[in-house]
Length: 570
Image (cartoon, rainbow, N blue to C red; front, side, top):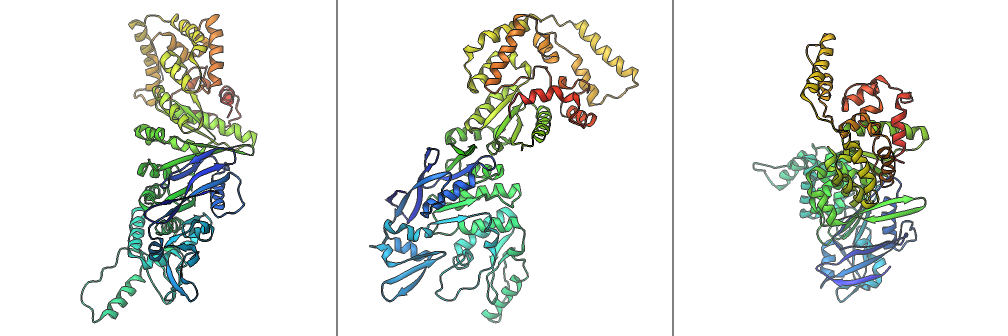
């Protein structure tokens, strides 16, 4: 571990680079909020433990090999230390400064400045580690301090410093709509929840006024008897607001919180952490991550951790590209950020595609006795597929794309997708042209007479069945009778078997293989509904009808769609 010393407004300790065991080195700024994301058991929490171990000069290191530090001095470190600590006189050596888990002795100082040579002695002044297993107990009422005793608990600081108390209460109010008020009894300092107490009217003396304040305060509920979400949320804030800390290591801050509170906590981080403070966080929460990025996109660095056997793979996401994703309203309000917490993401055009494929994959994984760590997302149409694919590539996510078969009708679109996924278009262009020409050869004029006959035939069927009012399923069937006699319409309706025999059939096989190799998987049967043609209808309601009619996923009707999902190699 190397330590660089710089000058600043206040003394502080930062991590300026992390060296990972896989050889990656990531450089950091002193105000970065570094977020570790990735699938379960990939090494996110272990990365935090390793960073803390490196700073504390311990030997427990699995994902992180080492860190390098920047130690920031000010013109008068002593003045800052005095504002955060309790002073006691040592008869032999001068003042000793003490606080939560630290002591700063006279020999740590030279000309009113901390000396970096003793950084291992006093780094607890600058750094705190908050694990999920100790946050809930942080809000338990500490004992009242005797005069000149050093603070041993963050609530001692809240009680002693009005600005910290006010910020804590304001942040708590944002999340839960109530204020926090430090109390007092004969021995402890609980935190009460409720509206601020305002005493009106005249009192005989100050003692009477204080007694009335205490009486009303004790009628309010206390935080340590509330739910885990409130307690965990406050436990984090109690440390974020302590002025001496410049480096925070926080594991899963969203634990115990509902999604709205998790997002608010992410927003609060940027407000609570000034530009002289740095944080390292692991999270499983899309909501927390969104709140954080919305509030301070320029400060957030996302490191995605994955595991290949015993090797942890590290990828830091490009901050500029991440911000570009966030500027797109569709992506910002989608669940695309959830992809960073999964092994693989599959992108489909519609929700009904996602539903059927995810149900089948769940079944296949259960048969194999393996967990399913694949996220299915849809993008509302094929034209947005390149945008979503680019975003997933930026996020460092392993992904597949399942477009409808008629994506091949748009040469620019399929070319764009193929190149985003890593393919070289000239290598497949000739085969694509053969397929496109084969589809074109199927085009025929769309005659008004033919369309009228098809509509009348369908309506006549409804009349024979005694139907007077058409429901959604029947309207869908009526819409599908209006059919443009174009090659790609035929192919989407009937699958690749509609292509002419010979060269087009050979070319579509080769083209499909090349697309699969880069993660693009075409359902060669055509429409999704062709996988199970014994059930009529279309869209999400069709998937529900399929499951209702064939609840046993071991039924032979699912064999075609199972074979297709297996080609995704998930």
